[in-house]
Image 1 (cartoon, rainbow, N blue to C red):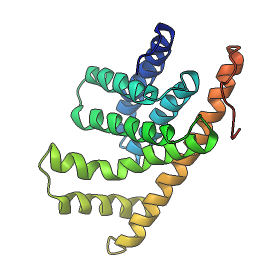
Image 2: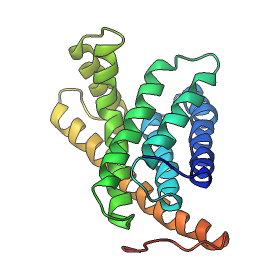
Image 3: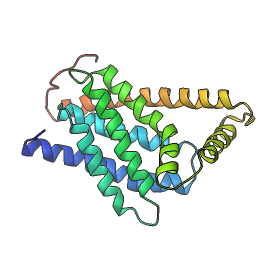
Image 4: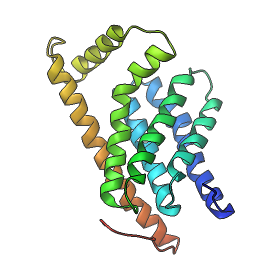
Length: 202
């Protein structure tokens, strides 16, 4: 799909913003070893991409923003970027597929996109671990259970509960992120004096 020059500039702004979030906030979150930092970054990134979708409500715009953010991630210093780059692209692709399933931007679409992007971070280690780093799936599974056990103070034997709670937290946080993206996007458009093409679900 071809975008106009104005649309490309708009998408570049949102792509740069997502990329800067990954480079700056991502470095801080990983440095302090904050639990669920990947989920936090995914939600913020998909929020930025979803808001870009309000300004350029066309199929492919969300993925385009994600590709730009992924390229900017290359400029991260002192960290492994292959895994995060794949994560950014996957999150953008998930959000793009969900948003494109709706005829127009809407609150439900944004919330589902946020939930999808957030939930991907649970699947991401299994994909990158196997494809790029040759890790055993069982080892990745044990890491997931160990992380959930520490966060929720549950015994590692409660595997089902850990996974269910992790999934619920990711879905809830992603949904809230999608809601915030919808509201913030409209606020920005109003302050810039731009009308939302479609405001269904607001």
